[in-house]
Image (cartoon, rainbow, N blue to C red; front, side):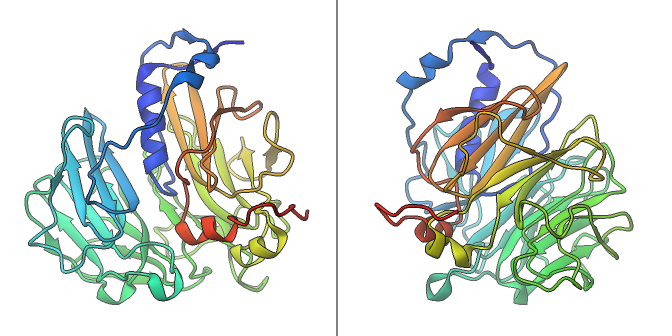
Length: 372
């Protein structure tokens, strides 16, 4: 059976393989797909598009109106920009940043010249982790930068910007909590009523009064709000929309459909990373809600019975009349669905891990059988 996929969506998939763990909500494209035999993908090979001195990729952001403009952040190479789809890259953080380790990049929807960068690779990896010194802001598409504080945060995993006001941003800090500013970074406040192991945070464009975030249930007690969570008051308070016994305890990537705010997807492992080496599996899965998180379906059609590696990269590409889902694992496998996650196809196997690096190491034991 043929798979509906366009050249734009194929390019989007390549960016997913660079992107570590972003909760992506696709933009409506308004184009028609065409039929491609999935077997043709078997002849394709991945190639490095650079920059060759950038280091391990930790963050990627694009420009919706300029399809070949992307920003890339590395663990030790700072922030890079391409205007030609990766043919050439320019470092835009040298001389402005005090550190070269990057954890998150976000471009404002209401003003594409406004960019926020969170420093410090995510997550914490023991003695080899490079920590950052807070948030940097550009108002001229990366030509110049200003440091906006949060020096002590060290590891920033995600930044989301309000779709109509670039002065309102929310920051997720790995083992540091959720923070927000309403004045462009001049002052910051912290949310205290949620597990501070903040993985992702996102404001959907179609429902900007909502704020979504993920914080795992695997490293906190039942009295702590955790899981896939939502806030209706700008992050002042949170409630979990996944049950405590949810199939995915180590929730991580998620997204909200750009046209239907009730359609949610979340992925992750059954248990926390500390158990993966012992069990030799993350036993990952994807779940879907069509009613804003009131009920959930765990998706399995076409996926392995037990996904050994964790799903840590997800993306949605939405266009007029449909959308496609992509999920990437720490083993470098990419799964694809075009029917709301009911059925999945493995379209890529064995590229570089779409992963937080220490998670890949925890699952890299050769010849070991998984214990379920």
